[in-house]
Image 1 (cartoon, rainbow, N blue to C red):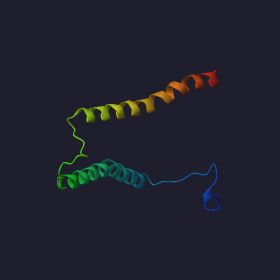
Image 2 (image 1 turned 90 degrees about the horizontal axis):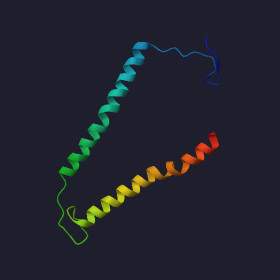
Image 3 (image 1 turned 180 degrees about the vertical axis):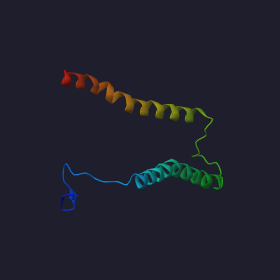
Image 4 (image 1 turned 90 degrees about the vertical axis):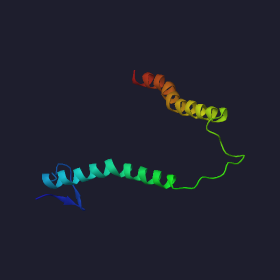
Length: 99
């Protein structure tokens, strides 16, 4: 018999799991985790495909112009910098702490 303190298992207690039930549950979780994002992405794509096209205005960003290219390159550089530079700075600090 397992010792339960306040509804929690104590250290050293064992949890007994039915292998068939665990396998089915984990299989269903993997299927949902695999296909739910795909279905959601397709739903968003269908919603966007059905949307009406708006007229071009002065505030429309043309994706074939140099402004779009500049914005795209700027975002790539900023995101790359935010990913790379913290490690560049924290690497020597970590090496100094470790040894």
